[in-house]
Length: 105
Image (cartoon, rainbow, N blue to C red; front, side, top):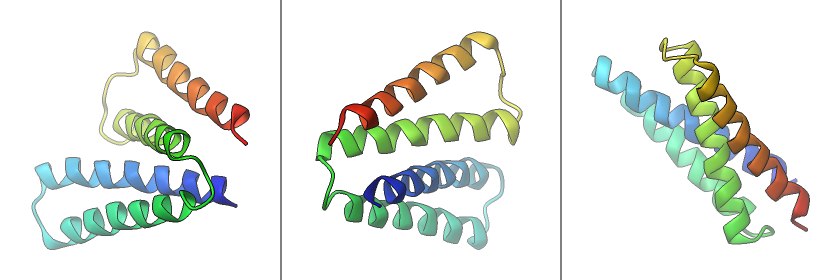
């Protein structure tokens, strides 16, 4: 269950990052609220997951998920580059994140 919570926390972190990008384009209270909710929820879920997962592994997986999902949001929502080299390195980060999960107890 902690791993599932950690994955949701990583996705919410990426959502918070997307809201920072959105806030730089349109400054309104709804975006600020979504940014606070995204990061607040992400940190609360990370804190919950840390009760049963090792800190180093959980933090690495949380940030890895945030990096991958945030980059994909940037590519598909905000029109950032979809260069094959960029996709290869996203796959490397994702592979390392999965590897950490597989070797953790």
